[in-house]
Amino acid sequence: MLPQKRHRDFGWLLIVCAGLLPLVLGILCTAIEARHTVSQQQILTANTLLTQAEKMSDNAWDMITELRQYHNQPCAQIQDKLQRAGTLNPYFRSIGMLNGDDISCSSAFGLAHGTLAEMMMQPPPITGKAWWSVSVRGTVGVPTRPAVVFVRQLPDTSGFWAVIDGQYLMDFMHAIGESRGYQMSLQFSGGAVIGSGPSDTSPELYLKSESYQTESSRYPISVNVTVPASELLKAWRQALFIFLPMAAIFSILLMILTANWLRRRISWRDEIRRAIRGRQFSVHYQPVYSNKFQACAGAEALLRWQLPNGEMIRPDIFISAAEAEGMIVPLTQHLLELMAEDIQSWQVEAGFHIGLNLAAEHLQHPDFIADIEQFAARIKHKQLCITLELTERSLIEDGEMVARKLRHLRAQGMKVAIDDFGTGHCSLTYLLTFPLDYLKIDRGFINAIEGLDVETPVLDAIINLCHKLELDVLGEGVETATQFAYLQQRGVIFIQGYYYARPMDNDQLRAWLSEQGHKPLLVEEHHEPELHHS
Image 1 (cartoon, rainbow, N blue to C red):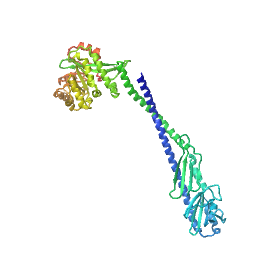
Image 2: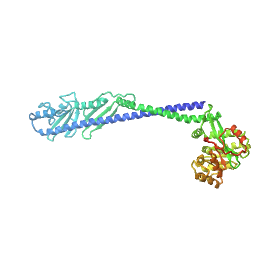
Image 3: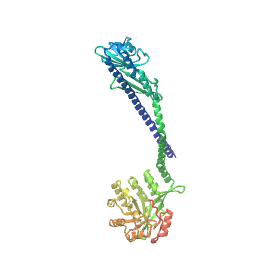
Image 4: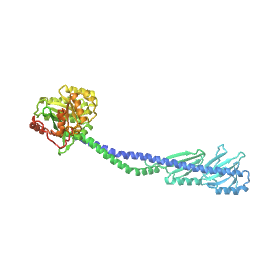
């Protein structure tokens, strides 16, 4: 019970892991996708803000270029023009002219004298350039609101200036970042920071704020956009909301598929082991008729599995499962044990053939020869002829080793047959390479017989080839008198099928053999189709 419990525990663990896998992967993928989406939005927002700042800078420098037309004109003459230009053009707080560091004319204050430093409320930057701009915390007229100052100085110490109100930039930042809670800022030439958005960017859970900074390739402008952790978490939740229903469906499907796979894999292996211990397997024997002796010359052993509730498991199902789960060798060893027990009660003449099917995996197994020799030793006193029936697939892998094993067993008086000849990876070289005694013609060729005078070229070719190679032939799946007569006419020695006898258990076989004796085959039709599972 402990191995079974471990299998169940392992199975449940595997099913749970299979169910969690799509969810875990989904959480990770949505986290990555959410971060990528927010990052792309962040970059787009920063570039949009930078583009707007460049556009406003273009307007400022265009305005300064227009002011060149008032060079050397008295302020009283151009003051109205400056006021009109500053009012009608967007973004500007004031514009004016310079004489050295002094403001000689202003659209906001007219003839009121002052210095550039007083207007900026800070010393002008030392750039060594005739063109420069800088962001400031405020100007003398509006000290509480940031602005950007643009200055063009001429060689004669005169110059022109323009001030853009920072409120335009803050409003723009507010418009594009408020919905996402972005904290945005920009600087001109490393001056005062013009910012917008919440200042609290404390981390939330395991997330932290992400910042992105970019700079203009045209002007000394830098932009920074910070995404709060709450925005990352919001984007993640939205992605999860979309993904989780699909992930749940995938999880359920994967759990179902895993459970089915485990049921097939673990249950079959365990069930076969329990069935061997519980002796649920038995052997049925299908007699083989000899045209030469006009009597039963042997029987083929066929493994059958009956559950305690009486249900029969089809041989093609449990044989395939045993091969897939690595149980075919123990199952074949159990078959040999059951056969040896049954044969002890047989009363047959010496030379009676007993055939058994062997799997390729058993042929490759190191205990193969020992298993067969042990079986032969247990029934030696019955003087039976053991026939090892192999499929063509059994001869493909490691053919030389298989040939050596077969030659060793033939030297002890055993026979070798190829079962279902013509249906597998057929190669005529097998007939020359391997030590063979019989070919069992597959029922598919037998079913092609339509009449005694109607030739079946492929079947006839196989029979003629066997005669030339001096191999005995057994026709499988013979169900009608026509099929029997056709094979008899062409020298097929052995006949097996429902026309002669069905598979039967050990007790039925002994009773049947006792009744048959050497009685010749009665030629009569049997219309019930044969269900053959080796």
